[in-house]
Image 1 (cartoon, helix red, strand yellow):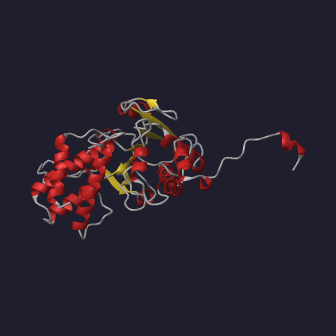
Image 2 (cartoon, chains in turn cyan, purple):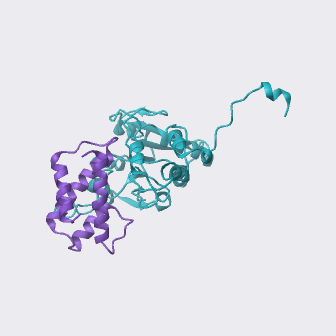
Image 3 (cartoon, chains in turn green, red):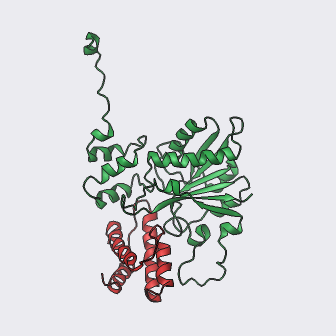
Length: 258
Length: 87
């Protein structure tokens, strides 16, 4: 050891996630800059069986609610999808592709996606985080307070992403009628569960719904193809998950037909 | 009944419904589960309507940042379903 080190006391290095106790790791997960792995999440919340109470308390927290539990594997998988889409749209440093996030909440999703896309396609994709501000959530990263219609007009994005669109709300019609939008991605519970409107968003009718006007799903009428991104979905963990037993959220792409 | 208690009760109902839907692909969501139970005539229409109502309550709870308060009518529907499913 060099003598100088005795006087140059540096703080001890941070503990690796595996050296933390589950409760310490849970506390660390409140840091918006920390992006855990799936394994970290399981370790923090399922040390000896799934403690549903702790999980729900964490996810339904009034100050910082968690809908989608962001993790490294999920961010990588979504970013890879966006990178492929951006390349197919001819993204370059001179003409970067714009991805608009609507309902960005605390801004973490856009933040981590931009970080990852800067590694994959440096300078070729710009992500803009926006939120109406209606839920009054605190932001951890830059999020522009603006309604989705104005944001669509202002940024003319080629791609739009909405994670956990509120129940019984549908804004996908506005995505489809915006000419610049080639693709929109919905993250969260799909197919008429807790995100969006059963019919307007997903084209699903409740059993015993005899409304004959509900014939062809609106996204098909508007000329969009649906693709379930199962390679992304396998990494997702949402507030309703049983951690390994049953997964409820997914990611779906709707692309304008050529 | 608070949010956490409601979700616990809902989870019991969901597990029971899944056990009744033998060929159902569990990767599909709750919405499709209800359709399966109806189209295979496993449950009566009245029970399907009650379940639809409770599924919608569940969706509102899950979609809200920190849960919602449930009305006595909501709680009554949960009890009726549990009785019908012998839970």
